[in-house]
Amino acid sequence: MNFKLYKNSFLCSSEDYLNSKVVLAGIPLDFTVSFKPGSRFGPSKIREVSSGLEEYSVYQNKNLFNKVFCDMGDLELPFGNVDKCIDIIFEFGKKVFQDDKIPIFLGGEHLISFPLIKAAKEMYDELVVLHFDAHADMRDDYMGEKLSHATVMRRAGEVIEFKNLYQFGIRSGSEDEILFAKENSNIFFIYEMEKLFEVLPKLQNKKIYLSIDIDVVDPAFAPGTGTPEPGGLTSSQFLEIILKMKDLDIIGADIVEVSPYYDISDRTSLLAAKIVRELILLLG
Image (cartoon, rainbow, N blue to C red; front, side):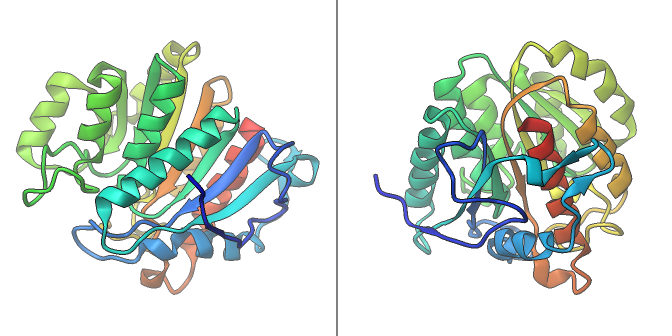
């Protein structure tokens, strides 16, 4: 399959795919959002505001100038055809994993995680998904649809086995999906975030796919998202969490649900860009 990508580059990135350990790619899928659409514009805005960041991280004492990483641009997706989009994203993700890269995918809505996790699972048999979100995303269907940003972790759990799904920051969900998650996955609510630091050491020898919905952060810090949910983490708390993952074997990551048009200040996109910078330095 040939992939058409539109270029728009992140701070300090290159086009040197061959020599890059870490690669970025935008997946501007935006079909199944249940409240406010617009996440298709997330990847380009995250790249745009990245120029406002320093190349140097005071958290890690590392500099993007010293890293070779590639920004592949945005994957072209056909409008209105969810199934075909899922297939294209899956094949694209599979190629990146087969090329032995560590991808950071920029969403787009959270449904992109399902085909990407499925692609990662083909490469890494004992895959664990570490999921940060305000919402459980564990419905079996949403308004009759099996493929939705509200069902994405239910579909992912079916692929990796629910015992390998760890969810943190959750503060919203239907009664049925929360009950299902409690019985089947490893779900930790926003008031249980300290449990993360007990879980992380247990995951050190596992292959980890990291999925970050920006709405895990409180809308006071990240209002530019389609389903803002009050009561979340601060931006500082989440950056601290990212740094705590330095000993994990993260084989890929996504950051999703940034909808820039709901945030005239761009602070949501800036936070996402800063998370991406720290991930590049952490993984590269």
